[in-house]
Amino acid sequence: MTVREIKKMGHPVLRRPADAIEDPTAPEIKALVEDMVDSMREAGGIGIAAPQIGVSKRVVMFHVPDDDAPGNDPETRRAVVENPLTVLINPTIDVLDETEVDGWEGCLSVPGLTGIVPRYKKIRYTGVTPDGEKIDRVASDFHARVVQHECDHVDGILYPYRMTSNASLMFTSEIEHLEAPPTEEELA
Ligand code: NI
Image 1 (tube, rainbow, N blue to C red):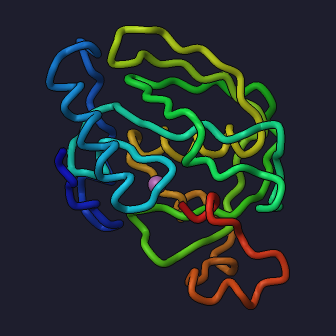
Image 2: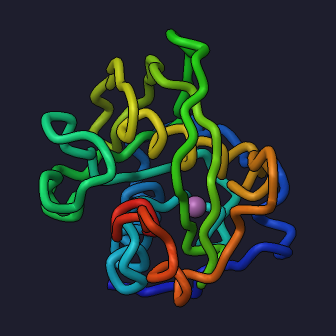
């Protein structure tokens, strides 16, 4: 197990498009995935991308949100860290519904901050697992948001670049002042 340092906004590895992976089942990719899992857990995240631990490769992972209880109410949505972890190598996204939905986001590479980001409501995403299994899913709402956030990382994009106004950008230590504060999952 290796917990690696999370690179923060400003580090060049977070700004460049990451490299595609030729052999998703290679042992080095399995080792990278293990380090990503360890680093994500240590940092308390629900998703992470390889560039965040300094590796410019197209690998992302995230706990699949519980779509049965969507929305912003922490009472009705299970903690996503308890949900299955999906690992995607060479992920792709197709937008199925161009409606943009605003929602709070946080990022391990932008610690202590949160802001409102518009994301497409419904997407189809694909990728390959480290076992060589193909993944092809349709996702909407928070699930779609998480996938869009993580896949942005391998294109060198952080959530603040997607914000249409930075008026909502704030420190998570101040969210108690909001009428409808973001949930733990949204901040992770
Ligand atoms: Ni992030």
